Image 1: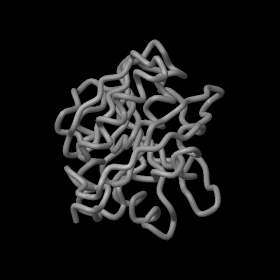
Image 2: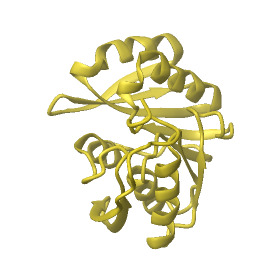
Image 3: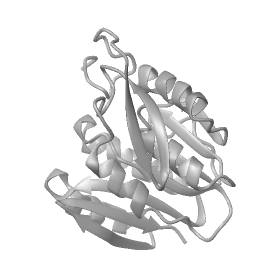
Image 4: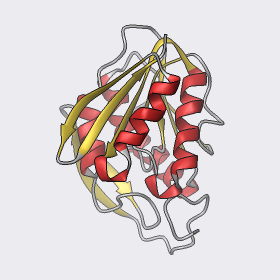
Length: 199
Protein backbone atom coordinates (compact mmCIF):
# COMPACT_ATOMS: atom_id res chain seq x y z
CA UNK A 1 0.00 0.00 0.00
CA UNK A 2 2.90 2.38 0.69
CA UNK A 3 3.59 2.68 -3.03
CA UNK A 4 0.19 4.26 -3.40
CA UNK A 5 -0.56 7.98 -3.10
CA UNK A 6 -2.96 7.30 -0.21
CA UNK A 7 -0.02 6.40 2.03
CA UNK A 8 1.57 8.32 4.85
CA UNK A 9 5.06 7.84 3.43
CA UNK A 10 5.26 6.64 -0.19
CA UNK A 11 8.30 4.40 -0.59
CA UNK A 12 8.84 5.11 -4.28
CA UNK A 13 12.00 7.10 -4.91
CA UNK A 14 11.50 10.85 -5.17
CA UNK A 15 11.88 12.34 -8.65
CA UNK A 16 10.40 15.87 -8.58
CA UNK A 17 9.21 17.68 -11.69
CA UNK A 18 7.34 20.91 -12.41
CA UNK A 19 4.08 21.49 -14.24
CA UNK A 20 2.08 24.54 -15.26
CA UNK A 21 -1.50 24.80 -14.04
CA UNK A 22 -4.16 27.38 -14.86
CA UNK A 23 -7.15 27.58 -12.51
CA UNK A 24 -9.86 30.24 -12.22
CA UNK A 25 -7.78 32.65 -14.30
CA UNK A 26 -4.56 32.25 -12.31
CA UNK A 27 -1.38 30.54 -13.54
CA UNK A 28 0.66 28.38 -11.17
CA UNK A 29 3.98 26.57 -11.37
CA UNK A 30 3.59 23.41 -9.29
CA UNK A 31 6.20 20.91 -8.20
CA UNK A 32 4.99 17.29 -8.27
CA UNK A 33 6.67 13.98 -7.55
CA UNK A 34 6.33 10.23 -7.71
CA UNK A 35 4.08 8.77 -5.03
CA UNK A 36 1.52 11.60 -5.16
CA UNK A 37 -1.83 11.73 -6.93
CA UNK A 38 -1.87 12.83 -10.58
CA UNK A 39 1.82 13.71 -10.63
CA UNK A 40 2.03 14.41 -14.38
CA UNK A 41 -0.65 17.12 -14.44
CA UNK A 42 -3.78 18.31 -12.67
CA UNK A 43 -6.45 15.68 -13.28
CA UNK A 44 -9.70 16.43 -15.09
CA UNK A 45 -11.93 15.87 -12.05
CA UNK A 46 -9.99 18.34 -9.91
CA UNK A 47 -10.15 20.94 -12.67
CA UNK A 48 -13.91 20.57 -13.04
CA UNK A 49 -14.36 20.82 -9.25
CA UNK A 50 -12.28 23.95 -8.77
CA UNK A 51 -14.03 25.75 -11.62
CA UNK A 52 -17.53 24.70 -10.51
CA UNK A 53 -17.07 25.64 -6.85
CA UNK A 54 -19.04 28.62 -5.53
CA UNK A 55 -18.39 30.01 -2.07
CA UNK A 56 -21.26 29.67 0.40
CA UNK A 57 -22.82 32.95 1.50
CA UNK A 58 -21.47 32.63 5.04
CA UNK A 59 -18.19 33.62 6.67
CA UNK A 60 -15.69 30.92 7.52
CA UNK A 61 -12.64 29.07 6.32
CA UNK A 62 -12.45 26.44 3.57
CA UNK A 63 -10.77 23.01 3.72
CA UNK A 64 -9.26 21.03 0.86
CA UNK A 65 -9.21 17.42 2.04
CA UNK A 66 -6.77 15.16 0.20
CA UNK A 67 -4.98 18.22 -1.14
CA UNK A 68 -2.13 16.36 -2.85
CA UNK A 69 0.52 18.78 -4.05
CA UNK A 70 -2.03 21.58 -3.83
CA UNK A 71 -3.79 22.47 -7.10
CA UNK A 72 -7.35 22.77 -5.73
CA UNK A 73 -6.50 24.45 -2.43
CA UNK A 74 -4.03 26.91 -3.94
CA UNK A 75 -6.39 27.80 -6.78
CA UNK A 76 -9.25 28.49 -4.36
CA UNK A 77 -6.99 30.40 -1.96
CA UNK A 78 -5.96 32.65 -4.86
CA UNK A 79 -9.58 33.03 -6.02
CA UNK A 80 -10.88 33.82 -2.51
CA UNK A 81 -8.07 35.77 -0.80
CA UNK A 82 -10.34 36.77 2.09
CA UNK A 83 -10.66 33.11 3.17
CA UNK A 84 -8.18 30.80 4.86
CA UNK A 85 -7.91 27.43 3.11
CA UNK A 86 -6.84 24.47 5.28
CA UNK A 87 -5.07 21.96 3.03
CA UNK A 88 -4.58 18.46 4.41
CA UNK A 89 -3.42 15.08 3.16
CA UNK A 90 -2.32 11.81 4.75
CA UNK A 91 0.65 11.72 2.34
CA UNK A 92 3.67 13.51 3.86
CA UNK A 93 5.38 13.95 0.50
CA UNK A 94 2.26 15.60 -0.94
CA UNK A 95 1.97 17.95 2.04
CA UNK A 96 5.62 18.99 1.72
CA UNK A 97 5.06 19.72 -1.98
CA UNK A 98 1.89 21.70 -1.22
CA UNK A 99 3.89 23.89 1.17
CA UNK A 100 6.60 24.48 -1.43
CA UNK A 101 3.97 25.27 -4.06
CA UNK A 102 2.22 27.77 -1.78
CA UNK A 103 5.56 29.58 -1.28
CA UNK A 104 6.53 29.36 -4.94
CA UNK A 105 3.22 30.91 -6.05
CA UNK A 106 2.97 33.51 -3.28
CA UNK A 107 -0.17 32.04 -1.70
CA UNK A 108 -0.23 32.98 1.99
CA UNK A 109 -3.86 32.38 3.07
CA UNK A 110 -3.38 28.62 3.47
CA UNK A 111 -2.68 26.33 6.42
CA UNK A 112 -1.12 23.04 5.31
CA UNK A 113 -0.84 19.93 7.49
CA UNK A 114 -0.55 16.16 7.45
CA UNK A 115 -3.91 14.73 8.49
CA UNK A 116 -5.69 11.39 8.33
CA UNK A 117 -8.98 12.57 6.91
CA UNK A 118 -10.00 15.75 8.73
CA UNK A 119 -8.44 14.96 12.10
CA UNK A 120 -6.20 18.05 11.97
CA UNK A 121 -8.81 20.42 10.51
CA UNK A 122 -10.60 22.93 12.77
CA UNK A 123 -14.36 23.25 13.13
CA UNK A 124 -16.36 26.27 11.99
CA UNK A 125 -15.80 25.81 8.25
CA UNK A 126 -17.87 27.39 5.50
CA UNK A 127 -16.85 24.83 2.88
CA UNK A 128 -15.06 21.52 2.49
CA UNK A 129 -13.80 20.65 -0.99
CA UNK A 130 -12.51 17.20 -1.90
CA UNK A 131 -11.50 15.00 -4.78
CA UNK A 132 -11.58 11.95 -2.51
CA UNK A 133 -9.04 9.09 -2.68
CA UNK A 134 -11.39 6.52 -4.19
CA UNK A 135 -8.83 3.75 -4.02
CA UNK A 136 -8.64 4.16 -0.23
CA UNK A 137 -12.08 2.54 -0.09
CA UNK A 138 -15.66 3.55 0.59
CA UNK A 139 -15.31 3.35 4.37
CA UNK A 140 -12.46 5.89 4.33
CA UNK A 141 -14.12 8.40 2.05
CA UNK A 142 -17.50 8.16 3.77
CA UNK A 143 -15.62 8.99 6.98
CA UNK A 144 -14.41 12.17 5.23
CA UNK A 145 -18.01 13.16 4.53
CA UNK A 146 -19.04 12.51 8.14
CA UNK A 147 -16.07 14.51 9.46
CA UNK A 148 -16.91 17.33 7.07
CA UNK A 149 -20.46 17.47 8.41
CA UNK A 150 -19.16 17.72 11.96
CA UNK A 151 -16.82 20.60 11.08
CA UNK A 152 -19.11 22.67 8.88
CA UNK A 153 -21.07 25.65 10.14
CA UNK A 154 -24.83 25.76 9.58
CA UNK A 155 -25.12 26.89 5.99
CA UNK A 156 -21.77 25.30 5.17
CA UNK A 157 -21.26 23.10 2.12
CA UNK A 158 -19.34 19.98 1.13
CA UNK A 159 -18.24 19.90 -2.53
CA UNK A 160 -17.11 16.61 -4.06
CA UNK A 161 -16.01 15.40 -7.47
CA UNK A 162 -16.52 11.70 -8.16
CA UNK A 163 -17.00 9.59 -11.26
CA UNK A 164 -20.33 7.88 -11.78
CA UNK A 165 -18.58 4.53 -12.28
CA UNK A 166 -16.63 5.01 -9.03
CA UNK A 167 -19.72 5.42 -6.90
CA UNK A 168 -21.30 8.84 -7.46
CA UNK A 169 -24.90 7.54 -7.05
CA UNK A 170 -24.13 5.70 -3.76
CA UNK A 171 -22.20 8.73 -2.53
CA UNK A 172 -25.23 10.91 -3.20
CA UNK A 173 -27.45 8.47 -1.27
CA UNK A 174 -25.06 8.50 1.69
CA UNK A 175 -24.90 12.31 1.72
CA UNK A 176 -28.71 12.52 1.68
CA UNK A 177 -28.76 10.65 5.00
CA UNK A 178 -26.46 13.25 6.57
CA UNK A 179 -27.03 16.61 4.91
CA UNK A 180 -30.14 18.75 4.59
CA UNK A 181 -29.80 19.36 0.86
CA UNK A 182 -27.81 17.46 -1.76
CA UNK A 183 -27.49 18.62 -5.35
CA UNK A 184 -25.70 17.39 -8.47
CA UNK A 185 -24.23 20.70 -9.61
CA UNK A 186 -22.67 19.41 -12.81
CA UNK A 187 -22.10 16.23 -14.83
CA UNK A 188 -19.16 16.27 -17.23
CA UNK A 189 -17.68 13.25 -19.02
CA UNK A 190 -18.83 10.84 -16.33
CA UNK A 191 -17.73 13.09 -13.45
CA UNK A 192 -20.32 14.38 -10.99
CA UNK A 193 -19.90 17.53 -8.92
CA UNK A 194 -21.94 17.06 -5.74
CA UNK A 195 -22.82 19.81 -3.28
CA UNK A 196 -24.17 18.88 0.16
CA UNK A 197 -25.47 21.64 2.40
CA UNK A 198 -25.76 21.53 6.19
CA UNK A 199 -28.56 23.42 7.98
